[in-house]
Amino acid sequence: MTLVRDVGEQGVLQKLKAFCPSDVIGDDGAILALKSSESLVVTTDVLVENIHFSDRTTAPEDIGWRAVAANLSDLAAMGATPVGLTVGLSLHGEVSLDWLDRLYQGLTACTSTYQTAIVGGDVCRSPVVSLAITAFGQVAPQRAIRRHTASPGNAIVVTGDHGSARAGLELLLQDEIPQDLTPEQRQTLIDAHQRPRPRLDVLAPLYALLGQQGCAGMDSSDGLADAVIQVCRESNVGASLKAEAIPIAPELRSWVGVERALDWALYGGEDFELLLCLPPDMAAELVQQIGGNAAIVGTIAGDRAVQLQTGDDWQTLSQQSGFQHF
Image 1 (cartoon, rainbow, N blue to C red):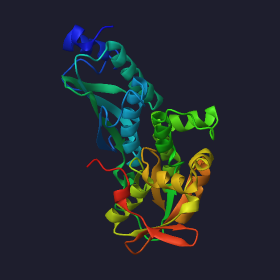
Image 2 (cartoon, helix red, strand yellow; image 1 turned 135 degrees about the horizontal axis):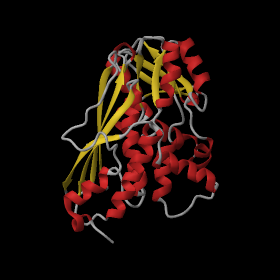
Image 3 (tube, rainbow, N blue to C red; image 1 turned 180 degrees about the vertical axis):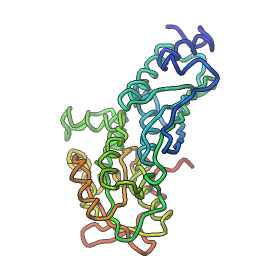
Image 4 (cartoon, rainbow, N blue to C red; image 1 turned 30 degrees about the vertical axis):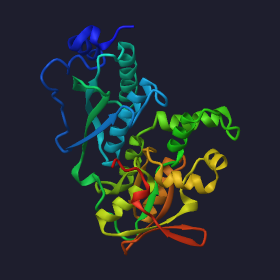
């Protein structure tokens, strides 16, 4: 087995160049063309070994896919279409070239699916493997999705199921296979964790409805509750959510029960769906157009409280229950 230390920095770089467009790679920087009427959107995400991924739960190909998907989800959350991305890769010498090759297969599988490319990056030595990806997108300024523009009366739309990624991680950490799930259901939940789909597909129908205006929103990668709270805080509004309206996969409910499934939907994170705040008629039309498990889950309110209705009970949602780095 050939290791990174056996080929050195230049050997690694030559291997990685094969995954990049030949007409872009080779200079000190990439030159990217943008549409004259659109603005540049930049987002960066860092994944660290044994914090964001491990060999126990994530194959190298899936690490690569997830790393790209996280950044493309941030672009989708801004209403931006991708232009390209760079990869900052930290490695130690004991990493095998096969592992590295599989990582980049996952990276390029995701970039090619969403019509973008790796246009540069850097490699350095580190005791821990990490990836720092910076993605570039473009959006007409007036069409950008922002967190601070939600208005009382807006309907709150989510574009798909929540809680499935958290369930997939739980399945990967368990030694026993749950008898409540079929092999197909189990794999569907695992795929939600390992191969999330950034919702760039939502942008075309969204802007067909909005025309030249934007809307409020963000992605739900740190949990649905976190997304609602952040939008409300930035917009100086509140929200009322209905628990029964939150889209949750039926197999998740049947496996862990309604209460835990709802908790994972609100706080589990890494579902990479979009949360959008729209006038009610537009929200209903968007949900119908994108289909799947998209749903209207609540309403933006005039006060600052963010509350969840479950049956006849109301509770105030807490951001502290979601994922926190520190």
